[in-house]
Length: 220
Ligand code: SF4
Image (cartoon, helix red, strand yellow):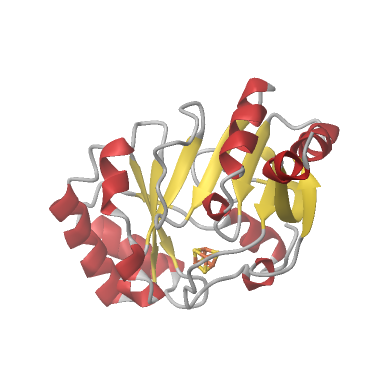
């Protein structure tokens, strides 16, 4: 194989670890996380800044082997922004072919059209409080199915009101599950829960289970 071909089969990986899924539809399941290096966004609340630059190149066979070694059924490919590395698409398909339940966590700023249809896509909608709302790729919305989830991280009451209006404007509630999370340390969880209940808003409240269990640490 030429050097160029070898490069096409590689990904820059920040970490691979085994934990409980802390968010979205597979919450609570033992899951292997594959964290890819790099992200073109800079959300003010980012808790994975350590993944912006650090990481080593691995070929896809080695990544798949490492994932299998944990014996988990669920795999989550995350970042950073995993879709910033085009080979991510190949990895996702390979993991699906191997029989894993595969999810992808993505910022919502990049095209999700080529992601394998067997993958459950967890797509962020960046609120103004993230300081990256201009990056939301609305062309992704028609591609969402009931397998997918849209995630809003709410940083303030203004963010919450903006998110409600955004859901209506783009007709998002009918497309897929909609998740509202309080930004860690910025909105008290009970406050967000009260807002949702008061408005009879048909969204799914969620907390980051891994942070409740272990705090804000890498590799969990
Ligand atoms: S998209 Fe995710 S990884 Fe990238 S800066 Fe925002 S929170 Fe961090």
